[in-house]
Length: 368
Ligand code: GTP
Image 1 (tube, rainbow, N blue to C red):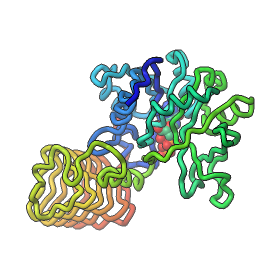
Image 2: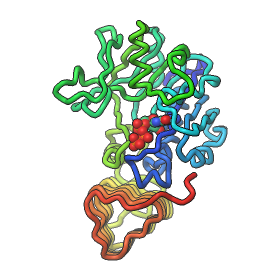
Image 3: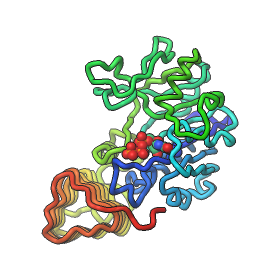
Image 4: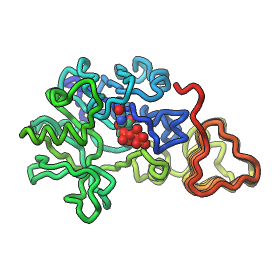
């Protein structure tokens, strides 16, 4: 891949949101650290930055920053210098940028911390260099733009309007703001300091209203926003099936794959961390991710689900299209149906039957 580092590009990653829609997972883990295929999502984002030649990241954090700081430290281990700006109160997606203004030395990428995409950042930089203007926004096309911010532009790519969450039949376009930007430093002048400011609702519209140029960079890359449990599961399914290009072996993958090979009840694709213990009569898959140290009891069934580390599934239990956070215990014969989300260290009683879409778990006493 071409490297973008001739100009020592920086990236600001917005990781300060509370991730309310992913609760109870985000009671114990901030959204950017939620694992994707057993690796914290933010670490995957950092890998993308590294591949694009970016060696400096500024993390605009706020909610549970400890987990993030402990994992990345100063970034030496991953080859990227990491600086943190921790907000006492959330400053919004533009306020967070204003808050790191002193660290910004030139044009910079901005990444929403919950976007999983195969976007090529180097190609986006080249596009910005060709177009000029105050910045470039990555756009993607969606079938139903009504839940997103629509972005209208002319044939040259110049953006003329932002329309937030339009009713489906009134959407001016199917192109939406995909949450990755490349901005000139001067954009920060448009952001008032000391109060929450939204980049989507306030700053971008103001920039174009003042006659400055923002350009659209529309691609057909893989793209998903991990904000809701259904999307989180969909992202895993897409990786397991090979729709999202991530370096994962087809079929059985992960450190624990060898333990599952030849198991009669395993239906690929399945990805397993190390030290998993699966009873010979259990049924696993398809589209399952097991975190390190999971144990699955006799006659238990796990399908279309993501289990984080050290989840214990009792004999005869059934988990389907669900997410189970680290340390949780699913009692024998319990039913954890479609859409269930089980928080950290939760114990589901034996024989319990959860409602579809159940969310079980509460805030931890000492959030990091
Ligand atoms: P929900 O509460 O479920 O809506 O999630 P969220 O709080 O993460 O909000 P949203 O998905 O809209 O945020 C998009 C991205 O911006 C995420 O990566 C958030 O971490 C980040 N973000 C949102 N608000 C702030 C903020 O006030 N400060 C910072 N630093 N980041 C933010």
